Amino acid sequence: MTETVVMSQDVGGAPRTQVAITALLIVAGVLILFVPAGEEGRVLVPVSEGHGLSAVDGVGAALLALGGTWLEVLVVRRLPYLALPPRALFGLGLLAGLGMGLLIASVFSGFFWWWAIGATTLGVAVLVLVPLTARR
Picture 1 (cartoon, rainbow, N blue to C red):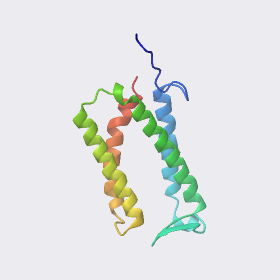
Picture 2: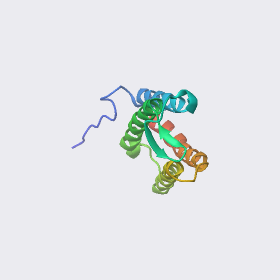
Picture 3: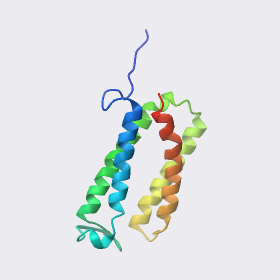
């Protein structure tokens, strides 16, 4: 028997529409996080030396987390249809994991400028997977 599977049609429409919505959420979150520290208000949750979350940061982080998680779910649900070889998937996963690890490490340690390398490596993986996910 053949089973018909509808991918990501249930919530929010076609994959292309959902990818566009997640991209808007991520861009909005990043832009809010770029607000200068002097205009954010007081720090509500200190994270490390020189880092802390204000209410503005919380809104930006929430938008970024929502958009990023939704995008990750879309990519994972469509992986079987992307027709990528196992080595490419492994390499992209390694690249994305390394990038995310460097981003997190830059916040909680003295690796302050490593965030740029982490963002670049994560961005490369995203730039490969997202256009493939948005296709039908």
